[in-house]
Each structure stands twice: as structure tokens, then as C-alpha cells.
Amino acid sequence: MSDPANKPDASGVRATFSLPVGPGFLHASAVVPAGRTTLTELLPIIRSLDDAIVGRAGQEASAAGSPISCGPGCGACCRQMVPLSLFEAEALAAWLRSLPEERRAVLEERFHRALLALRDAGVMDKILSDNWAAGGEAAAELAVDYFHAGVACPFLENESCSIHPIRPLSCREYLVTSPPELCRDPAVHAVAGVQLPLRLSGALYAFGRQMEQDPRGWFPLVFLLAWSRSDAHPGEKVAGTGEEVLRAFFERLAATGTAETAEAPSEATAEQAEAP
Ligand code: SF4
Image (tube, rainbow, N blue to C red; front, side, top):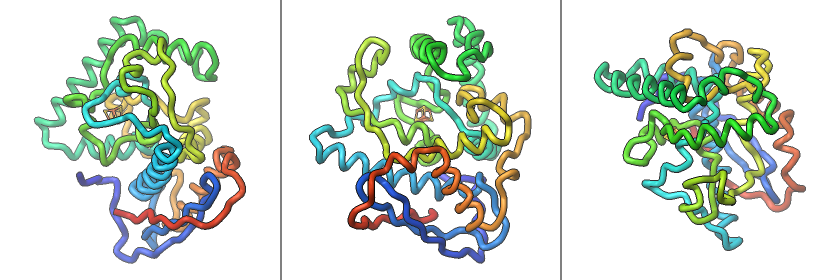
């Protein structure tokens, strides 16, 4: 699947970096544009790195006797309220605009229906009230109400993600180890998941909070279509050479506190996060 937000500069440079992940380091390299780019344009690299972190966390969970139970054809978690960063929204909005008219119309209809279903279930008023923005009990209650409304993500088709290669980081980072049937109602059953040592999504939300003075730095994915009509370009506010933008991203990642959860590094582990 092509991603129109990713336009690699012909004169790319290789950036190498090491991130403390769990008991070791994740060493990665990526070809980034030598010239001006934006955080949104670097999303393919960030997704690739996220996949490397998530993949390794999955392997460690398996080795510890708790393999990931998520699998093809199970879209239970795709009925939750999915956080979407502003930068991922920009990329997905561009991708939506690039679709053939017929396909775009199908997806737009699903977004409309999802919003109407949330309204009819009484959830839309709660989302718009914004008293859940700071988290806590109101946010937990909204999460349960949203799930109980049973509104599938507009990108879910035959219980599979139709945008799998460009799905949001929040979807990539959701790893369940308990039996899949428990996901039918996480409000009733205790769903066990993998705690990632680094959540790259957190850094994207942190940039969003700084830029928009929004307490969350993200919005529910179900609002993507409406948001895309604002023609906003948040990536332009985090721009520079590829190396500068990537460095700014990692600095923000460290500042979100997720990096500090990694324990003291041991022997290096080699993985690659190559630009696709
Ligand atoms: S984007 Fe894909 S993985 Fe994420 S909630 Fe939607 S269908 Fe599920």
C-alpha cells in the first residue's frame, strides 16, 4: 500500500540510533531525507521502528510463556476508541484523498454511520463533553461506553484491518496475551496485555499536546474524516532535515518518560528499522 505522505528525498542519508529497550538496546538505522522533511513524512520510519519494538516484545512474551493471542480475523479491539495522533491523521487524510472516488465514498459512508451510531448510543455527547480529557474515572467510563456501543472502526473489514501497513501506532502497540474470547468485553473480563518498554505513540501525542495546547494530543480515530476537512498540516510544525526531525522525535520520546522505563542496558541487540 502506498503512503502519499512518504516522499523520500532522492538524496537520503542514513541515520543510526540506539534506544534503550527492556534489558538491552535496539540499534536501528534508517534512510532519512537529507533535505527538508516533516514528522508526518517520517511516519513510515517511525512505524517500522514501532514494529521492531513490538515484535521483540512479542518474542519476549512468548519466551516467558505468554504468547500474543491476537490473530487474523479477530477485530474485537477495533471497537474501542482508538487514539490517533495529529501526524497520523495528516497521513491518513492524505491517503484517503488519494483513493479512487468509489472506494473513498465507501469509507466516508462508514465514518458517517459510525458517528451516527455513537450518537444514537449516547456516547457522542460524552466524547464532546471533554470532561474525560484529563483521564481518570471519566475516561475509563467513556472507554467502556464506547466499546459497549459496538461501533467498529471504519477501516475494519471482515474483522481484519484494511489499512494494516499504515494503521495507527496505538493499534500496533496493543498486544493481548489472554484468550481472545475475553476481548469480547474487556469491561467484564480481565484482558492481559504486553507492557511495552517504549511507546512511540506517546512521543507523537506529546508533540500534539505542545502544538495544539490540547490536553491529549490525539483525537478518536472515528473523527478522522471530519478532521481531514480542516486541511490541517501539523507535520509542518515539526520540520527540518531528516536527521533533525528524527532527533527531535527521540528527544521527545525520552521526555515523555517512556524511555526511562527501560532498565539498565545489557548486551546490544541488533535490529534494523529501515525506511520502506
Ligand atoms: S485502524 Fe485497523 S487495527 Fe486500528 S482499530 Fe481500525 S481496523 Fe482496527
